[in-house]
Length: 210
Image (cartoon, rainbow, N blue to C red; front, top):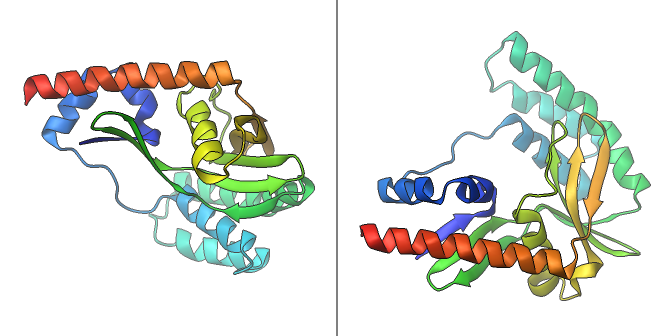
């Protein structure tokens, strides 16, 4: 069985054969918690009422002590700390209800190949549901495969609603802004078709080299 994470999907899209090679070499990712991950942990704690904003910022500063003390790290850390309270205010302004940080994805796209990983933040409001990743700086995300796939998966497997009841996108820390869209059914079907085609190629190459 081959498992492909949503977070790696654009790399896989660009070079399926490189991914097959990595599978053969059994390369693994992971490791130490990053700065943005610590930021997200504190945001989740604030959303769930475990920490008030001042306490979350204090905890964030404590977590950052585990990183090397240099000008580059200090600049990034101050940037993240500076964005914490404004983000929480923006969240209130959107009138969101926090549902959860993430749900696991386990999607059998084709035989023996699964799309895996985790959804981003889950929230609801009067208009339906939204799910967004945090980014530190603006990125061109609208054409990435994972977003329409996540919209479909959330509607079908998590929220049990129509795809048009779900928005997906990002919250950018540098611009302090949400960017959310709803992909059309045609966009979603095209993304599913392309992903299945990529996964079929990966399975064929993997079986060929086994």
